[in-house]
Image (cartoon, rainbow, N blue to C red):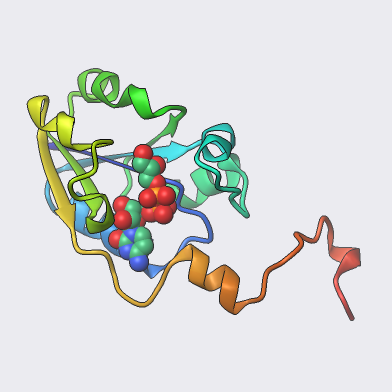
Amino acid sequence: MKRVLTYGTFDLLHYGHIEILRRAKALGDYLVVALSTDEFNESKGKTAYHSYETRKKMLEAIRYVDLVIPENSWEQKINDIKEYHIDVVVMGSDWAGSDRFDYLKDYCDLVFLERTPGVSTTMIKHDLGLKEAVKNEDQLPE
Ligand code: C2G
């Protein structure tokens, strides 16, 4: 049983996310996704549109994903690898060479997969002109 682990925010889920999850799962038999909590996102200077619970439910609905765990800090990765008996950590190529990941080579295999071009959560927000979050439905324009 080869166990794979990846990290991310996975906000406004899109096919770039699906593609990395599909390819990560193809490298093994069991895929763990460490999902950034809302608090951790804050420390990354990111505000997700969907809450952690919503993002977790969406990931759990994806056929490639076997387990979703919280990502609370940058420092938890070695513990995650040990606790979940991980053989390979997979990330998109934007993380290649990052000191946030390179040291993991001493604990498991480390694979960076090409990012899917032409899509990102930031692009979606920009193209939809998402500015102020609408707190509830009745505030939406007719
Ligand atoms: N990704 C991709 N192609 C895209 C967009 C994203 O392959 N077009 C990949 C990213 O490279 C990442 C994963 O999808 O591996 C999740 O992307 P984000 O949700 O943006 O995650 P990120 O903000 O990179 O958080 O500790 C690491 C962080 O939690 C990673």
